[in-house]
Length: 375
Ligand code: EPS
Image: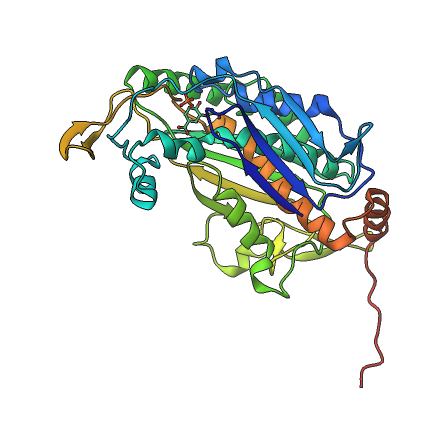
């Protein structure tokens, strides 16, 4: 499976083309709209999000609601234009402006932002939402929540069920399943906005009930951790990705997850590995924690240099967001869905959805040791 995303942030539309997705899967368009709305509505986004409706069309690869095996093309319209009309030559520290100019040399910094803007994630969410639906029909639940914004961090509550957590998260404007922390995060964002500042933070994405044995190490670079790192690090502002328990100061005896038998079935006492061992899923929840830097466009701008005159100047303020952590957590669900759907399709075949369903059902029965007649 291969995904290509194109479109300029202030062009007519964003495009996602997904190649190698199996035929015969029924798509729920309302679920895609719902995920697009979630991405758009995270607290801390700027005026642009109020201008966009994220109307989308599936332009190919679907016949009367079912996928056909042909490339699936998703088109999401852009409404907002670029508010900056004049040539811009003063780079914002932290954005693509300076590095893009050093790479391509075109004398207007507005150009580089068109590709580097987080707008592409709208097409990614549209396609990823479809992949998340696909995984759900295999009983895999992919969900995310915000852990921290700026200095405000949530204490995790291990007693919440997935349904309870998702309900609490969906009631929070910052997608944080702890009401008190969520209120503090909102205040923290408001304060940052008043100061002309921005905030980073972290979120967690989990895939529950994932079949074991997904991923690969025949080609060492296909290890699932490697793929997770590559896809998550492509999300704008992401600076770090961690799989499983983050406290690597504890010794091996405490870190690794012992096996035990329950009613004749193999179980684990913990999940510090975050569901991946040796680059393959082990059947436990896949858990990814993702860290974002604060976004670089500041209301109270940093020092910079005018590249056309070589004079010191303040960076410009352009319409922007205060924090993207809640929206990025929705994008993170799609990143994990892409990596896992890819691995499922690779293991079970890319032609027919029904065949994948029955193979997964069959695998769920477990694996029993089979002796070989070794030489
Ligand atoms: C972005 C700047 C803002 C954000 C944009 C990412 O856009 P604009 O410059 O048009 O106001 O709103 O994010 C999106 C458009 C989106 O859909 O997420 C940037 O510079 O990266």
